[in-house]
Length: 63
Image (cartoon, rainbow, N blue to C red; front, side, top):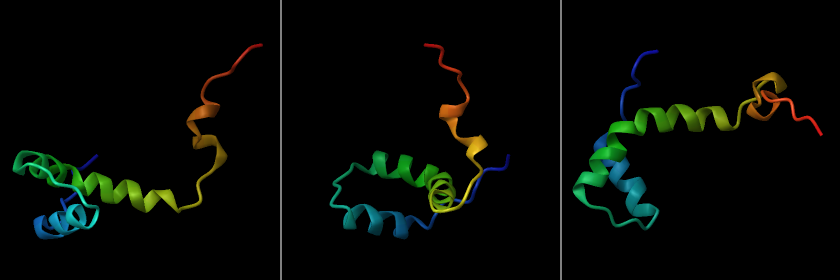
């Protein structure tokens, strides 16, 4: 799995400001560092996926 390219730093700061978050520069650095993963995850949220990938179906619960 390759490391996704982070979002533009200014774009991350705008999103954080729009969300009303006041963060330290270190926190912003951390969020910027993982922003590529966040963007990939958000792209999956609205997509159709097979029922078999649902984590709840991984375990069989016995009564």
